[in-house]
Length: 589
Picture: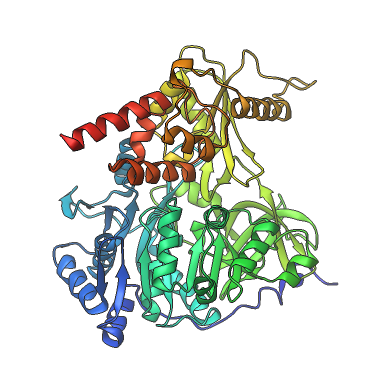
């Protein structure tokens, strides 16, 4: 009798040789082979491999630690990459923190990681005198060591630190170098933030083959992406689906760019068949891949080459097949392996599985499990089906985690934060609009606080991508016949409110009929008919991509420099116009 586990035998036949080299050693190899070649470009500078290596060694000499966690808070630029390599070169492991992360969360990460030092603004700050214990040292294979700890959203409202080693990451890089035929002729585009694991492939994958990495400072800046594509012969694109979707919607690129791009990697969120077709049409010479997995499994564990033949065969983009030395299974609630077409939890086994969560043995033991037949597995929390022995089909999530425009977000964390700060019952959920943009909606019962007060307070505790796009007040939550919250009705209420806010005709003062160019631009960007001084852009549904467009328009047309945070601080349209006026006056004076 054929056991269900045997159904996966050929599917999981992925054994392959992988390198046992440390990530920072890739840079030395590249320096020796391609010393005079440009290694990295950012918005302001470029650096060769020889210059990069020299800078790394010089900075690493200032780090007198060994096998210790060192945090790094830095913008996306060449200097931050130098510091990342320097931490590894000095025999330590890095903990990337986005500079826009709220201070409260930054402090939590530093304490949870037990970081011995912090690199910020090119300065090294010593945080403690005694060494930290090496986490999960018993799990480390001979010759391996920790490379980085990336903190992701946690179900308790606190981020959790995923511990990855050099060997684990090299296994992923080896697969993609071979599979994608990566070489020193490739020009990589770095779109993801450095605290997001897609950047690990961008940085180390490029150096591995002696390619050139061009860093986009903010992936919401679609104009910067277009200019970079046009001017740098980019061959490798790696992003969440939403970034590509918004880019293709906003810009046309030259035939030269279309012909140059040969690899398009999409991961981190749902890929619609329409986007897949759009990507194939936009980049006719490119191999377009869907990739999946988890931060807990060395960037990616599963992939699918997307073709038009594949899309004509299925009504969805298949999740795909496992990468080298990794295995994928579907198991039920009793930890039994599921058969063909049965829905269960997607689990990952093999060389990519992380050591665990830093400082959280209990959470590690619940999520990284020793299975009686499969060995050590990671429970992804994703639901899927094994289809016809060919691929996994992604079905959904088991918990309150969701992907919002490429970011992994815990809806329960957002809800708990609102409840703790404002002492109000609330429900947080997502709505996907026709454009493919997901919006986080918070429905609450507090009459004490305005939307702007709630939003500004949340900015101190949540990352920008976690802040709800819309706050809706209700006296009572709708309930089903059995007394449970009726989420279907809640979503209907939210969709109706969003449509009302979009179509509302704000009263325009007759004395102000000459609408400014800025307001005309806003109307087109937000896709709304009329705007008044008292309208809040966030109430009208502005998303992060639109925020960057607004910032760029102001800088280009008003000849001033602003930050995204300035728009958050002046989200009322009349107030933002006054802010722009005062800023221009200060520049002139």
